[in-house]
View (tube, protein in one colour):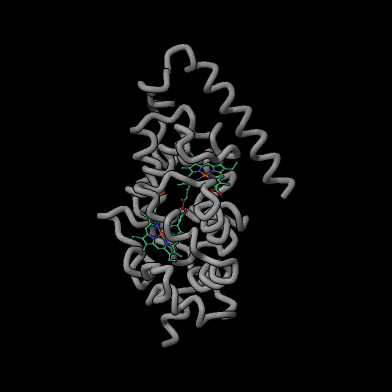
Length: 220
Ligand code: HEC
Ligand code: HEC
């Protein structure tokens, strides 16, 4: 943990210098490529303090981004840069990225091998029923799998993110944030209108199931 904090402080220092150098020319609408000579891997280095160079993080609330659809990564990084999705911890690291930087970094992480998680298998029935069938009661929640795919892999074309293998703690936080409206960057409030009906028990069960979905499925 201490080494990670030191890493972050060092990166913030380097970043501070980079910002100071470019801030006179870069404005919000016309971002300059931060460092022209850098390869995508080098540009992604700044993300490694939290998301790791492999895109698979070791801290439960810092999401895995390896193997995620490029289009979804571009949307999130851009929205975090522009504060449409508020992530104070990360904002300083992305606020000066150009659209081209973002595209290259997204390509880099999306081409990496996704994480494979483990489920505790607790409340599996609650999770599976919601994931595969939704709720038949008056809440009329659509099955998660219709959008996120029944394998949890999502769909690039429609920008439905892959969820399989994600940290359960991060998944829980996102579902709670959609439910409370804290996260509101989902188009047409698609996730907010679903999450607002979910109970804590369902959120916990879903997060646990989804994180281990690849292994559970292979056992069938
Ligand atoms: C200081 C730690 C930190 C750094 C450095 C950082 N991030 Fe993040 N990132 C986070 C946290 C924390 C979240 C999740 C916030 C939340 O709970 O919504 C996040 C979320 C994301 C997401 C959204 C993932 C999803 O599934 O929706 C993407 C994509 C992302 N980061 C990419 C990057 C990239 C690319 C960089 C480097 C340019 C970077 N991050 C640097 C901490 C960091
Ligand atoms: C109608 C399509 C649809 C359905 C049904 C749906 N989702 Fe989503 N979900 C989305 C979209 C689109 C996003 C991305 C929002 C954005 O752009 O930030 C998303 C995002 C998420 C995220 C955040 C992922 C991340 O990496 O940050 C989680 C977690 C999630 N959905 C879980 C669920 C669960 C659990 C269910 C079922 C109860 C569900 N979704 C049902 C469309 C859907």
